[in-house]
Length: 156
Image (cartoon, rainbow, N blue to C red; front, side):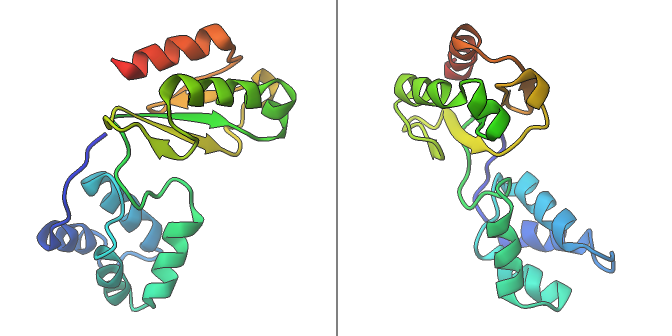
């Protein structure tokens, strides 16, 4: 995952790419996150001004959607589904195992910046739960063996 320190010139270029585009806020935020690896706080007022909306509106969207990050993620991101179907098939025990093996709680990044462990509330894979995602790749029918393999992959 790409991370870059905030610089206003890059943010201005990202914003300019969406100038005049109807409904530009979400695509602009995604592009900003692609550029920096997260949504830098100084970018919020720049986006608000460009779109003629309040900073609170921009901040509200950034904080509402779990996929927008306030801080850079680790090099690998593991998302474990915590929705009802996954709960019924053992995701809570798998989450506890992942937290124990990685030494981080859900929503945190390992101290070495290698792995971010996140809860997600439905990957749309209820029929093959429990499910997970590592760096955008879906893993269905997750069990201890598959989880351990994912954790080993992410720890490299």
